[in-house]
Image (cartoon, rainbow, N blue to C red; front, side, top):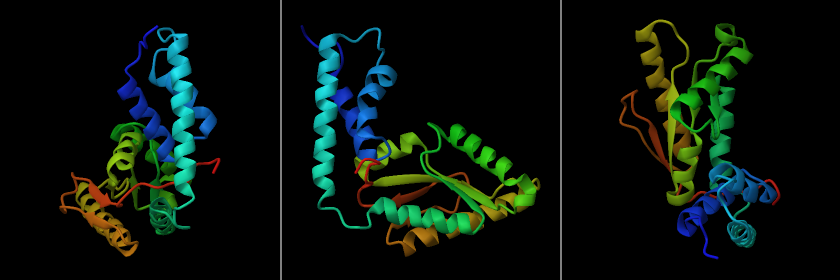
Length: 201
């Protein structure tokens, strides 16, 4: 029986999940069968194909990891995020699926930290669609803001400061980073390629 799924599209999604480095190997198969596709519409042949493709992709990534440097592009990016957090800037990896989701996650972190009393002065994040793009192209778009300052002019001025600091740290980490200076536009970081070791590596 022929496959009912789109092999090229599904293979691409498997690749993105595996090579993102965020998911255990064992989770990839069900993320495709139960989340990406409709489990009520796929056939036994589809499931067998997905299982084989997921296993193949995981093996290929593990083999590639053997030749990776001790510190990958993700590790350097994470070090930038750690530095930002130390400077009272919320920095989140894979924050939701959209910009709105990411800002919701930031607000939750801000609330947990104590709101205005926390001294948090801004945020920086990328969402899962940005991650997919980074896996495929090595380019990552980062959203940011100058925090929850009520006064618009102060918030916008602080957003410029935060944006410039993020760019500065990215460049210090060896990445090419571009930002127009417009607070309504995101920062683009050229990572070269996306390499993150998976949780089972």
